[in-house]
Amino acid sequence: NAGVTQTPKFQVLKTGQSMTLQCAQDMNHEYMSWYRQDPGMGLRLIHYSVGAGITDQGEVPNGYNVSRSTTEDFPLRLLSAAPSQTSVYFCASSPRPSGANVLTFGAGSRLTVL
Amino acid sequence: QQQVKQSPQSLIVQKGGISIINCAYENTAFDYFPWYQQFPGKGPALLIAIRPDVSEKKEGRFTISFNKSAKQFSLHIMDSQPGDSATYFCAASREDNYGQNFVFGPGTRLSVLP
Image (cartoon, rainbow over all chains, first blue to last red; front, top):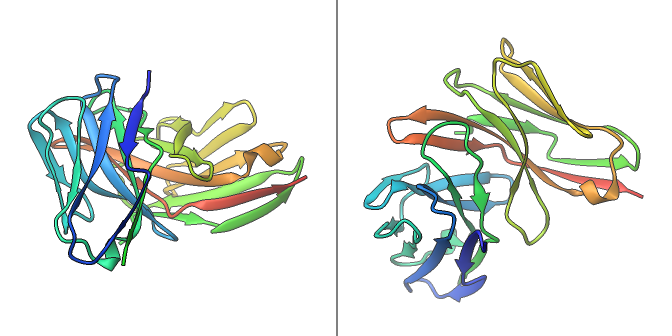
């Protein structure tokens, strides 16, 4: 099993450009989420999904869009990149939306916005 | 607004020593408290977790101590090894209308000297 796969691993954007960070999991997990990791801030939840067609906002959703058309995929879209979005992004999934679940993280995508 | 506080920010321990990382939370609705370990260039991975109805949980060299009345919990790493050098995140979660979402502490960078 591949687990949670994120692409690309590294990306450099110019201010105002748009891009999509891809996330795919092959564990048939219902719950998927996106976090950003910044020094001294820990992991902050951007958006999450409890199943195909269902998404909701997390702590820091501004400037990001998500959709969940299949169980496996949960892409994160940056509509108009800003330097404040320079960060490491992690996708994570768990078997069910509720209960004491284990989050399985991807390896991360490092984004730099110039 | 940080719902989970974590200290220290960084920790240096000699091989064989005890590493202690502390966390505190505010929301009494939290009902699951995991610790995640992250090596450089990798995504976080679950290390150990505890429910608030238990005061202590031990797995090998890793122990969580939980104080419900003080809303505090800590990670103890006994006989610390250089291979334990990583960033550690405490987290707390609760079930809301859409399932379970995690709030992470800012992280502690542990260095174990040989």
